[in-house]
Amino acid sequence: MSAGSVSSISETPHFVRSGPPVAILLSLYNGEAFLSRQLDSFLEQEHHNWLLLWRDDGSSDSSRAILKAFQANRGAGRCVEADSESGINIGIAASYWQLLTQVPDGYLVAFADQDDVWLPDKISRGVTALKDVPESKPALYFGRQILTDRFLNPLMISPAVKNLQGIFSALAQNVATGCTVMLNKRALHLLKIMGPFPPSILHDWAAYLAVIAAGGVVYIDSRPVVLYRQHATNAVGARPSWFRRGYAAVRRGPEVFMTIFRSNIAWLLNNREFLDPSVVSILKIMQKNLTGTRLDRLRLLTQYPELSRTGLSENFLFRLWFISAKAQASFFEPEDEGGHDMDC
Image (cartoon, rainbow, N blue to C red; front, side):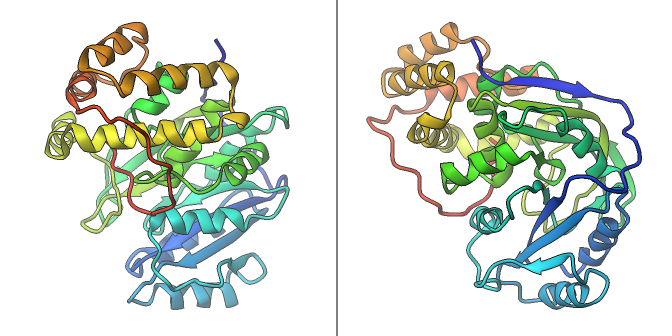
C-alpha cells in the first residue's frame, strides 16, 4: 500500500547563499511585542533567496505598521503585503489560505508565525531536504523546536516524532508544527487545486494531510530549527506534557474530535482525483464505518491498528473517543471558515 512515506534527516546542510526561491508566509494578529525579533531572524538566514508574503488579520496594535516599516526599509524588495483585504479579520486558516494563493510559480513555501525566532539554518535545512524530491511528487519538511518562555529562555526541545504510519497518523493528529513546515513546488500546487482548508484545522495540518494522502513524502528533521516562544497569547502553542494534552482533550470531549476527523476525511474525498488510489480506498472504508455503530468503529480500529496517536495515554484517549462518539449519518461539505487547529 502506498500511503505516503516519511524520512528523517540529521546531517548539517552546506551553507546556502543562493538556490531556489522561498516564499515565507506570515499572517499577523496583534503581534507587536515579538514581531521585530522574528523579522530579524529572517534577515539572519543563511539562505538569502527568500520573499516575505504577509497580510494583517485585523490587528488593533502596531503590527501592520511594523511590517510596513520593514517592507520599506530592511526588507525592501523582498517583502510584499500580499492581500488586497489585508487588515480585515478572516481567521488564521483563511488568512494563510489567502497567502498561499499569492505564492508565485516556482517558489518553495515556508510557513511562519509572528512570535517565534528562526535559527539561521532554518530555511537552508528545509531546502536541502526537499531538493532531491522528484518534481512530480509533493513533499513537506518539518523540524523540531526549542520551546522557550516569552523572553526566549529555553525550556525544552520538542519531542522527537517517530514511527509515523502514513495517512493513519495524519488523520489521528497533526505532528507537523506550522512554524517549521516547508513545502516543495508540487505540494504548493496540490494545496492550491484542493481548495480552501477543511473546517477547524490550520494550514499546517491541511498541508500534512494533503501531501501524505497524495502519496507524497514527509521529511522530519531531528534537529530544532525554531525558537518556539510560549506565552499567554499563543494562537495554538505547544503542550509539553501528556497530562496537559490529555486534560485539554477531555474538556473538548469526543464529539469535537470526531467532527474534525470526519470533516478531514470529507475534504480529502472531495479531492480524491488528486490522491493516491490506495489512500482513497482506505478513506472510503473509514467514511462508511464512521456512519455506523460503535461496534463498526471498533472493527475499524481492529482492521487498521496503524490508526493511532503517539504515546500510550494519548492513544488510549484517541481510541476511547473514536469508539464512544455519536455516529453521524452523513458528511458535510467542508467550507473555509478559518478557525484554530484543535490539536485533538
